[in-house]
Length: 286
Image (cartoon, rainbow, N blue to C red):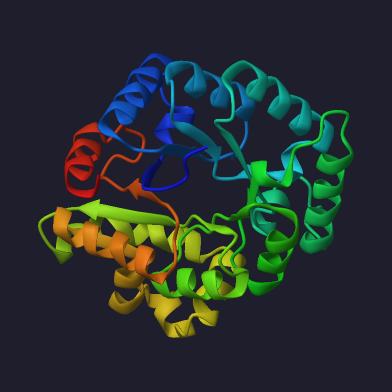
């Protein structure tokens, strides 16, 4: 399983038109991206993984990340075994505890003791009829406690909406053996005004979730930065500008210890496939 280089993190690859998903995934592989990452915010995520694996030959397909509240360990382990048997060692299982406002929306009070919930889910993967090996999974670790669990029970971490400084801290905490695979949101644009128009409301929605807000505070941002979506915070979390600006940010993650960076392109239409932007980034990054 090649988890070097640069990958693509994409909502359209999860929820878009199936025919275009297959076509786009095949092109991303030909362009040289080493992995595609898809979210899990409801629906048949393992079917989506299987569709992407079938559309490609070498590329890693990863969940970024599986919401553990939406799946049982037994279901997850059986799906992992089935997909790995059919497509080889190309499915990376990213697992996360999600966020209280999202989980509790349908069942108030369900989201509690997330660290215990993660430990129990991993126990279930370990004791399933066909266990998911530790080297086949990574955890969505933002804070140090979840990072400790990842160091002991997974292949590494896949943190979302983070900075190169977070990557540096993760590498320092996990040591040399684990994988650090951050997501980096990017906007290809001509200037700050266009970047803010595309990214501010998108970012504000994430900052309303406590896990992301608390992570930003740990990184040294202030409550005012979060409330206003300050330029300082925006520029730290979203890389924007031309291809060279995006390349610099990816290089910063690598210098900080990232093994692989999953680039998420933000555009005016978040549901559209940003295929031209992917092509431009491939030429600059790969």
